[in-house]
Length: 187
Image 1 (tube, rainbow, N blue to C red):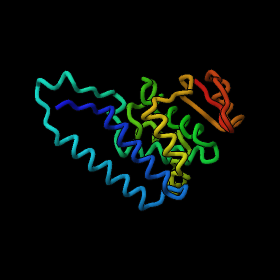
Image 2 (cartoon, rainbow, N blue to C red):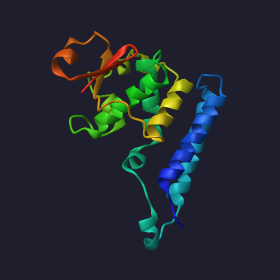
Image 3 (cartoon, one colour):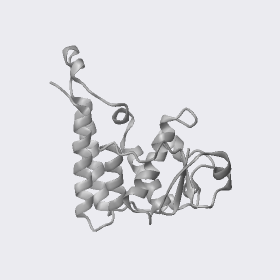
Image 4 (cartoon, one colour):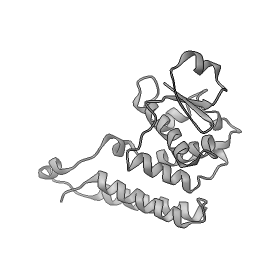
């Protein structure tokens, strides 16, 4: 049996986005629960699949799929909504990619969760922050699909962002890259 995990993950995420887009422009609790159920069933199916030594050369799993899980998706959806609610799909995707750029960088922790919850990095995750009360909308799910399945990346390697004009530290200590909506991006 040949297992192509990258293709399977893309099909799964496409199904998730379809379910969400059919919902009323909000990620309703029942829709989100259905997505989690589909993800969990897929994970069980893949982990139960037996692969012989002869099949190992036919398994293609990218690093992003190997390290990507339901919890990472949820964190990315929530941080994008909390940081870029009014910024549209591309603005939300930029937030997600900055997090993933940090995961890939040696300067930051090596997991989505550790990057987002690193002390002093993302204001919405503070105890009373927006992260804890937001519900990702359809644009968040579109952004996640762009980032995860289409390998979209217009960040120019950005590791930081802030509301335009709000961070003298970034303006003085990092390289300005571009502005999108109300956010400026830096490396």
